[in-house]
Length: 72
Image 1 (cartoon, rainbow, N blue to C red):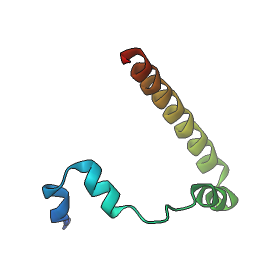
Image 2 (image 1 turned 45 degrees about the horizontal axis):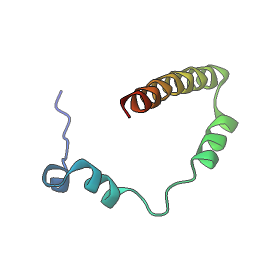
Image 3 (image 1 turned 120 degrees about the vertical axis):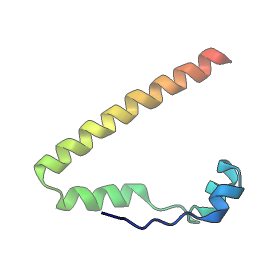
């Protein structure tokens, strides 16, 4: 099976931080509203998975934050 993909040429030419600034929506999306909308319609299984993934992200970013502080 062949799945067509497209690559934005700017992504290849620009540094990643510049590309992200240029392509992020302005203003940024309201994440709290998006999460609330998802939770209103999500199944109990989807909510449990969401909570599990959120916990994993919190642990990851806490470890990153500790590493940054240790390197200073």
